[in-house]
Length: 57
Image 1 (spheres, one colour):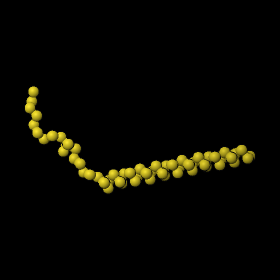
Image 2: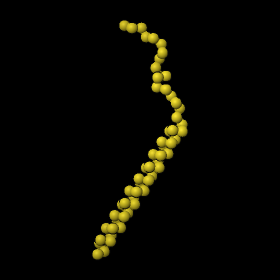
Image 3: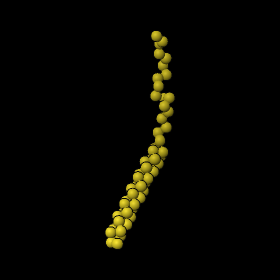
Image 4: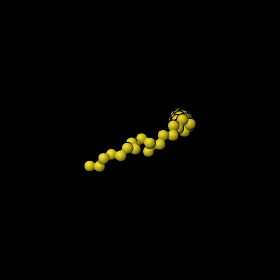
């Protein structure tokens, strides 16, 4: 009977560890996402190209 109780304790510890890791990863992802949204520089991809005409070959 004692062996079953030890297994339940280990199972609860693993579940608690996985839940805490999920919470930490979610919070870090949220912080990174909102930091990126807040500091969006608004760079237009089309402005990276040269507007001068190249001679055709």
